[in-house]
Length: 282
Image (cartoon, rainbow, N blue to C red; front, side, top):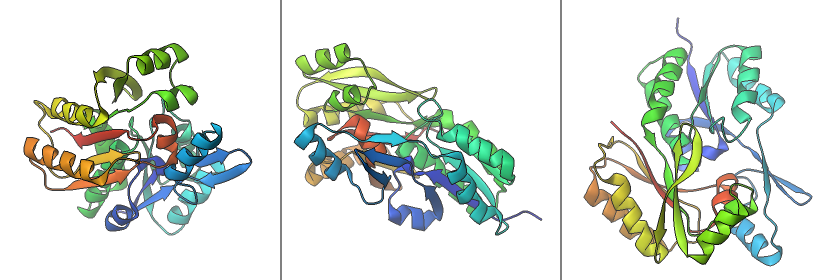
């Protein structure tokens, strides 16, 4: 007899409480360290507070992966209740959370780990896919195998207003940051083979760049219409997001469009006014 399945993900999936409840997805938070204060990602500390602190004294938080024992405690509550777990993590190229999850899964059993090779809503899209597969009656191993085969079709990209936060967080060299800032370039980044890299640099106001980025990112794509995300890191005028949403709807068929705000783990590296359109290709 097939055991019931729980879909889990780490907090970098950036799914809203409403979507987590709707799709019955459970999350485990990464840790945010700011000076002597420690927070759980998504709990008690917001990107807005993080940006405010940075502008006051130049301090950015450090982020820490989910540890082995945290995973043991997290998974155990489900396995001891008779469930099997399909768990997704941020790309193993960006964090050791996945390797820690694998160690815990091996020791516990009944846990199937998936390296999303993504971050933020790219990971969220896979978690939703897993939940929909569960609701169709698929077993845990089958769901995990399906999700692993789907990672290459997930399109995760963002355009940044500034490279300052990536430079400050050690994600790019000081030279590239300085050059981009001097030239007022807006870099666009994408996830490829589990790694995050710059694929284009735009010029102009960020509002104009958003539109250009979206048009180019969706051009020629056969997008699954089920779920499309517009994800941002805060400080973008809601009216601008509304206009971009309409643009996306004009360019591709969509059944549902979701609006996500990145948590502190993602926002601490990309900075304010970062925006991406994320989807799964057919």
